Image 1 (tube, rainbow, N blue to C red):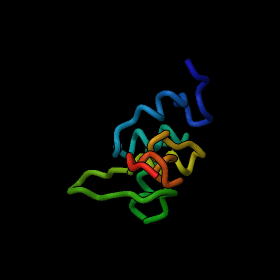
Image 2: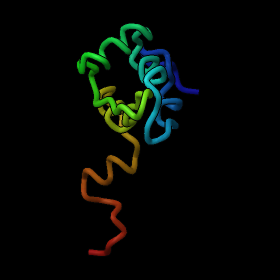
Image 3: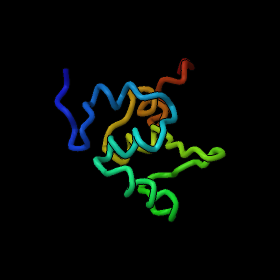
Image 4: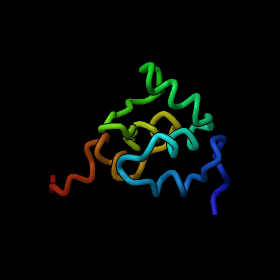
Length: 88
């Protein structure tokens, strides 16, 4: 098992997250408290894009991973133009 990141989640836990996560999970990954996280989201100052879906907040996991200096293998391949399934 990987060591926990500074935010309290291991690298394995972070890489296993779904495409979008709730704000509490993002706060945990970043190591910030619930009140601080919601305050930042409400003021538009959260460090990644926060989506407001009705009364719920969601964070796009790929943005969170990028902020933390991590990327899923598929995301890294797409950014590099690899893994597209086409032959040269």
